[in-house]
Image 1 (cartoon, helix red, strand yellow):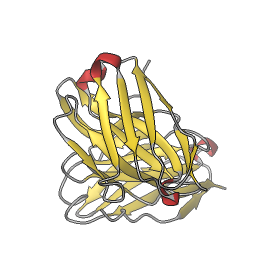
Image 2 (cartoon, chains in turn cyan, yellow):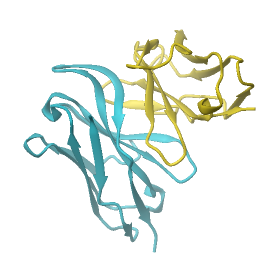
Image 3 (cartoon, chains in turn yellow, purple):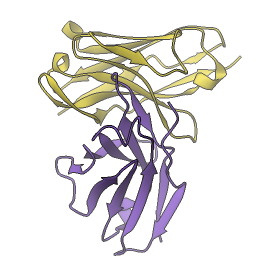
Image 4 (cartoon, helix red, strand yellow):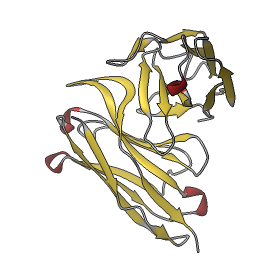
Length: 123
Length: 110
């Protein structure tokens, strides 16, 4: 059974930093691209950041470029999101998600999602 | 990276069919055959329904179907059931390992 468990969400002051983690199990983590998607309270989904299976390709939404960094550790089956210069508008539930597809290819969809971790940016 | 456009809400009665539209641009929906649809129940992470415009995720009921024409994709749910009441999001691959989501549609089953 695929499981994605996010952690690290807390209350942080504007301008602060935070590192989110996502621990994966139930699949060969190193074979799949992974992503972070967020959802502000009462709002829709917003794609934040993605990393390919061997970290060769990384990209971020314009709203977080230069402030957030995605990374992964395939040996530890873990995905990370380093969040710097946090703003109140970054307040959201952050989900990690696994790409659909198979070993070495992607169907460009987000097949499995975690339950999310809440990040609150407020003074 | 502008969001895709979905209706804010749709409704239907049990047994009826509904369609949710999703309009993008020639840079996302119209360029790639990678529109996906997700269902989100309150307090839960989203669940993949449809990928590559019209392929059902493993185990998904045939009541759910996806289609696309030009820059607009659609999700149709036939034989509506009470448990289909949820938020639905479309999403398109947009190149360079990026995605763009729609604003979401709240489905009410009356």
